[in-house]
Amino acid sequence: MKLRAALVAGVSLLLGIGAALTSASAASADPQPLSPEAEVLATNFQLPFPCGQSWYGNSDQSSAHRSHEIDFNRGSTPDADLGDPVVAAAAGTVAISSHQGSVNRFGNLVKIDHGGGWATYYAHLNVRNVTVGQSVSQGQQIGTVGKTSAPGNNISAHLHYEVRQGDGYPGNIRQAVFNGTTFGYPAQTITSRNCGGSTNPYTPQEACGSGYNVIDSAALGSSGTVYLLYNNDNGNNCVVTMKHTSIGTPTAVTAYLEVQGSARKTDSGNYGYYAGPVYANAPGKCVKWGGKAGSSTYDSPFEHCGS
Image (cartoon, rainbow, N blue to C red):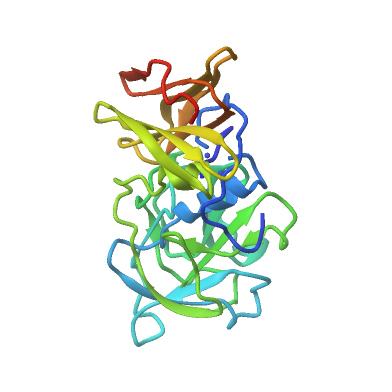
């Protein structure tokens, strides 16, 4: 679960998928576009409202909807939520912050790029609190609920929310996932868990994939933990370094795995959540493994021979 070459195709987002990822050179965070890993990363999106608030979302009561867009409201009257805070569903960079009523009837629109082709859209805002090029963290306020649109198009207050990946509208609209669970289309009342992003939403097992279990680990100060996992079904080892600080913000992190007698495999870059997974098969051989997060490094001896 990660986005790389900047931060992160299916209609269903899958959990527990692992595959070897290419090393990254850009500074956003973590899997390749259109890959199963990228789908998994999307599970880090949270509801675009402050922690603890409950909102009713509906995807089928608007002629403007083409796919999995959601209109959000709360309160018993049409404009009860006018002016309520709207926050970023995930960390990213503001790509659009403008009034687009004459273009697409979105009114005040904010688009946030999350890397890997993933983007979220927040439309009809009353106020926009961010500018193009600005980096935003998960849960940061980006505007308020409004009812701006094209001239003459009178609507009640609501937030129009979309998740897109890549190009080719409307085929690039993806199902929304909040806190690891796909929205209950066509309608659902959901409580926000957008509570600051202080906990890494991924586990080593989710990063490496189905069938992998932790067999060893080492703390990297308070910045992270590096894990060694093994899959009994295919005999592969996997190493991943999970971040504990600066969650969702790209920072330097490394994971490596070396089979005795073979070249070391390393994944190192600026990632939001973790480095790796790094895979290797080592039948009857010892492995050396380790990683780095923050200023802390761990390097194991050759061990776990035959694992």
